[in-house]
Image 1 (cartoon, rainbow, N blue to C red):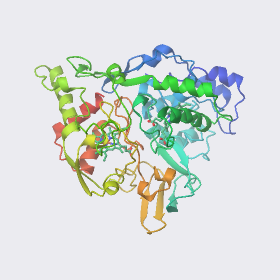
Image 2: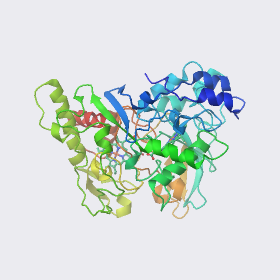
Image 3: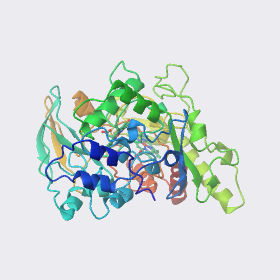
Image 4: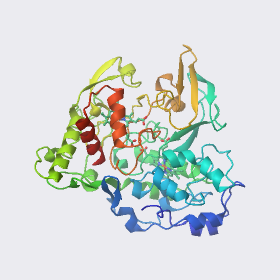
Length: 465
Ligand code: HEC
Ligand code: HEC
């Protein structure tokens, strides 16, 4: 469905720019061959997905397919859109990436620097490329390379990398692209907040992020101009994406529901809004009623469609109100010195109707424990605390690679929960293949005691966001 929606300019750029590619990289002709144009209609069209359809709107009407977001601005043929696709709510999915591989594996997303399991793998033949890009195709993850910072409170004492590349100078971290939409609600930029500089506005951080993405992912030799950065940030910041229809419940804006991107775009936000620990600068006390999108559906009865709507409303109610014991979460329990905190999904997912954490607090849900969450064959790292000698074995040290803090090992931000149905798998590492798997993870991790109907309702609700 979306496979042909690549970016517009590769043909032009591949012809105009000498491509500084490694010897085994695809030729310029291959790149031009596998790229297709995107049209402005494709930016805002309704895309079907596993549980209905989703749509993107632009609040400024800026849907120019010649925006630099869609252009190859580096040396390897890549544009932002290669990893931020409108059909996947501005992320990517394993199925469509695999379809993009086709029979050649030369489309711009297949580049050694960060598309491959390691940058030193052989990619001369199709079979070698299929193997080198297996994590990208299986999990939809990109390799983020970050070294141990000089001020780290820990040492990296042991590396298990099946691809024989990672070291203290550059750990290989396999992470899902975060959607480049609904950015109005960001409290912090990137899973580990590394693009968020204290004192900067989110817009300034996004401005730097656009440049860093071009230098990194697209391997540009020179920084973007100020005008290019601004054009990218103006474009992406105007986008709002949400599920718009549900296969069983029908229109998500019918019968008083306020689903879809238009209502989302009107949702107020400021950093700290509705924070449970009292960080809201507006001083408004925390409310667990974070999602109100499906309030009007709580009383639906009768038809099959009404039953589907009632299920979504019950799922929203579980998300807002079901209490469980939050324990062992680095960033919460240790930070506030409360080993057991009675909370809800909304304790962390506190931004009204967007669902991300409204503060940039990095948290460890335990998803990087390689013994519990054995995700394909990704590298594992053993870290030792320089002071206490304590040890952690993790697939991704997260925020700790940015600020060096032991307390931040394996911590990540709480992401925006809209447009979910079209962009699985979920979590930073793609551990949960489906939204039902997400719900099962939480049920097990925090002993929610959900019955089958609760699991179905909560997954139906998440899919309707
Ligand atoms: C090769 C794939 C790839 C390309 C190309 C790419 N990105 Fe990303 N993007 C990612 C990944 C992976 C992440 C998450 C990485 C992390 O957090 O460590 C991300 C994160 C982001 C985020 C952060 C969203 C949030 O919730 O914090 C924004 C915004 C973004 N990208 C915009 C862009 C722009 C603009 C471009 C082009 C200049 C671009 N990306 C090019 C893969 C890519
Ligand atoms: C203790 C804080 C906390 C609680 C409680 C919590 N979450 Fe999360 N949630 C997070 C964090 C942090 C992440 C990102 C974790 C990662 O990828 O490592 C996340 C990720 C997610 C994602 C994946 C989004 C994506 O883009 O991949 C979904 C869906 C989600 N949570 C739903 C829920 C539901 C449903 C509940 C209640 C059953 C819940 N969360 C409770 C903190 C929390």
